Length: 136
Image (cartoon, rainbow, N blue to C red; front, top):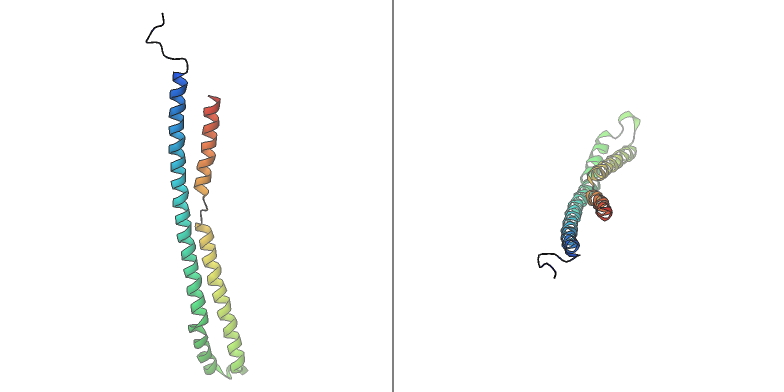
């Protein structure tokens, strides 16, 4: 007669597979949450970049040209440079400042942009872990 305390042949395997399935579901859930949080942070960073570029554009298109015209009028004839030439000099200077500000905002954005870097690293680690589980 068979001993009732003896367990079925695949009971341990079934238990281990059930535990592995639970771990995989938990891992996938955590990875999804990490990806969602990283995307949310990256969108916030992109929003800040857009605001910085917008502020630089508004400044370059409104206040500075008005100040440049006033200054060109005041400097008319100084150093044998006519008002129109002063306006051209100021316009070039403002363009350089606007482009420099936009470039600095872009560099700051790129420096802080993560782009799912942590999620991809975690997925690589999970793949290694799954390969180790499959071999063991």
